[in-house]
Amino acid sequence: MVELQTVEEHSILRSSDLHVYYGKKEALKGITMGFKQGEIAALIGPSGCGKSTYLRTLNRMNDLIPGMTITGNVSFKEKNIYRPKMDIVELRKDIGMVFQQPNPFPFSIYENVAYGLRLTQNIPKQQLDDIVERSLRAAFVWEDVKDKLNKSALSLSGGQQQRVCIARVLAVNPQVILLDEPTSALDPVSSGKIEEMLLELKEKYTLIIVTHNMQQASRISDKTAFFLNGELIEYDQTRKIFSNPAQAATDDYISGRFG
Image 1 (cartoon, helix red, strand yellow):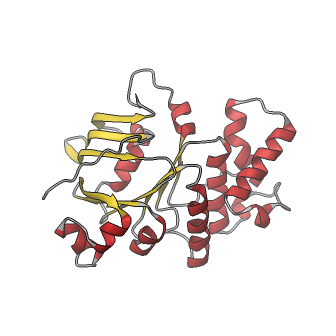
Image 2 (image 1 turned 135 degrees about the horizontal axis):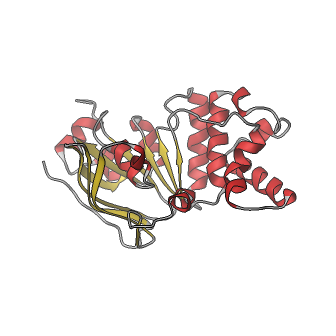
Image 3 (image 1 turned 90 degrees about the vertical axis):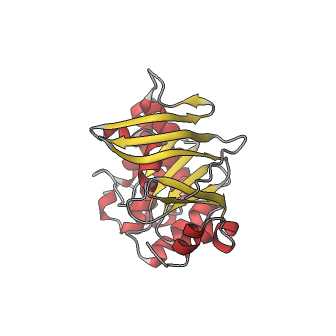
């Protein structure tokens, strides 16, 4: 099986010959690809193919897994994020992450969004209020929560919780947002709102989304990467991946013949 390796010029974030091992098991096999600002990239492939593992290498979330080792390089704005003395807190501020299950903190809606800012900065109340409102608006949830900012975020619906979690990421002004199946636990209406929001957010951010939903990938992404057995099989413009893929395995997966 041929692996297509593509690194875009002017990529804000890229990996080069990236290998990830869990103990002796090789989970990623030499992944080289890049992501440009102002684009949505979708990572697709069957369960266990390596797409979520790859996503988590991009802001070092895999560091938390015992026995994980990595070779190769991941660079953000031309600097290796695995270099010694890398400030992980700063990295995860620049490259934020949204998870499959909404994970609001057991605080008020306001404090959920303000949390990251309070950790790192001493911001006047009025300015903090403005940032919280702006972030909730950008996450398409302000109208739902503006009159209950002091209520627990856990009281919201699943879709609202997920959008508050996205607002929490936006509040610290990231440059890249990683999303690991952010709509898989949500109903179709909530999923649609998040897709609409992501299309707006790509004007300002680089977005990388893992999804099992082929229709979602084709609707919202500019580029699509197909992973299989830890390898990057194909990475290209979404319209080409879905209409004329270069690899037979990609065509088989998209057509539903496996996976």
